[in-house]
Amino acid sequence: MVRVGIFGATGYTGVELIRILSKHEKVEIKYLSSQSYNAKAISDVYSSLIGFCDKELEELSLEKAMSECDVIFTALPSGHASKIAREAVKKGVKVIDLGADFRFDDYSVYKEWYGGDYENYEGIKRVYGLPEVYRETIKEAEVVGNPGCYPTSVILGLMPLLKNGIIEGNVIVDSKSGVSGAGHNLSHNNMYAECNENIKAYNVAKHRHIPEIEQELSKVFGEKVSVVFTPHLTPMTRGILSTMYCKLKKDMDVNTVYNVYTDFYKNEYFVKVLQPGNYPATKNVYGSNFCHIGFEIDKHTSTLIVMSAIDNLVKGASGQAVQNMNIMFGINENTGLDIVPIYP
Image (cartoon, rainbow, N blue to C red):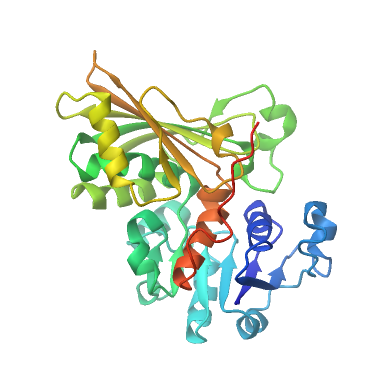
């Protein structure tokens, strides 16, 4: 059994980790931390977990967690995981960070977009945790930087095209996310009266996920990829739908594009390529670790329109983190994640 600790267990991604791991046949949840609900049972905070996980929440103690756990999931604000990871790795404890601390190859990019300082960034052996790209290196990783939710939807949607040189390296991305993507803490923008019956763009051309998306797509493409990225907040709880507008390098029909996608993802269980004419919907991946991809060609402008849908809390966060854990510990990748999406 893999002994698991979760720092930040009462945020949305922390609770989603518990939901998934409580039914994982190879996992024992040993340690849960919470600053806000110390000494309460997690099931007293979230009644959905009664009988599945009733463990008491504790103050964050890295020393105790390292003594009890084989892997720590950090679901904390940016800047905290770096300190935790250095100490954990010394003790042979693996770390999967759901924040941004380990997503960037260049520390200066992280600092520019997220701020803060920490030492020895280059000294931590880390892997970007997108299994469809880095599976083999994740197997040997000590620290995994779990991808952001928007980047997961965009990167999975565009990789086959860039890898095969089908599109140009300038892409327009329009993404829409459910309110849970804003996190558990209350703010003016995610109050019910602000979100209900409303859809709005935010952080236009300056969202923190832009450099992460460009970093990973540029690696696939072999040269610089530039992304115009506009996120929107939509009046739903879960889900991300990303629509990407790509300029084709040559004329192509939808069947050829479909074959490119199906060949690229033929061994990937969690990526489902839809038949031409079928388009992804967030409802069809709700509560699951799947990514659905569809596309259409606008022949008038030689534009390939790609659409991808994920659940932002599962494939966009906690589910992908468990997928990474399975890979790191030699467990069947689907374990704990072979969940049929909830519909309707």
